[in-house]
Length: 251
Image (cartoon, rainbow, N blue to C red):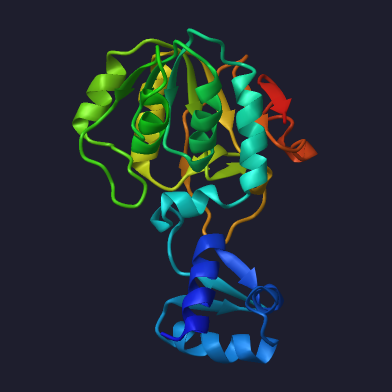
């Protein structure tokens, strides 16, 4: 592939959907050049063409973990800083594998004496070397694109833990169906963590309230009254019923 093809493909894969005008600005070329460069990528099935934009053909879970962390980075950092206001020194917490959870793990480095259980290698490595922390890695077999584990031993470790909080994430928030993800294993691990936690913290940035080309269809477990929703913008009014019994915090 040419340099332009590589840059264009990487940009669209990382963002999911990008307009031709935005790609023109990013690559510093004309709209006509974007259309010419993208044509063979569309023909090979690497990208999908829609009106005025290009769409990645990768599913969301296929995006590398660090690439997902760079999406809406400022929003995720703000959410992480708000979550840390809830957690105190000495608390125990289960943490999932979401990209926002990675930023929360970084923010939690300011606290001490934490007990952490996670199925994310990134989260475990971020918090394990802090003096006084007790970090348990749930699982032994790690996925190549995000370093997450969903094997039997992951569930065994989680089942033995009783924690103060569980930090969960979602790929999309739907006003009728709640918090949605792409894979059944994500639902299963969230259910196991939630069953052994005092309170849940659902951390989602504003983009999760917006329509998506590849809509996830699997529901995360239902949160309990008094659980937290932490986001970076006030959710639209249509979600008020869904969040009526939650403590909503806006970073």
